Length: 104
Image (tube, rainbow, N blue to C red):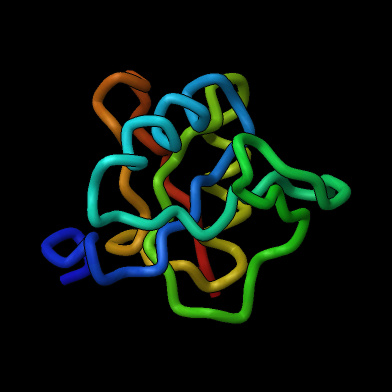
């Protein structure tokens, strides 16, 4: 279960936002490493030294949803590209519950 081993997981934040920045700052003094921020279609850049990537990486990862403006669209994108529900963590602070998405 990826939620039980976050310190050992490849963590990708899904959504470039102030919320993502808070996660990055919070992780600085912990064993957790945030490998990237995913923002669909974004040109590569950085936020607090963490790369912002515009395409999903080819690694197995745990995604933390940090998109504060369009979380459903980000959720749909992740699911449509093979990311399992179990690999996406939705912080309670987002007050977001994903609508059902059909994944083939």
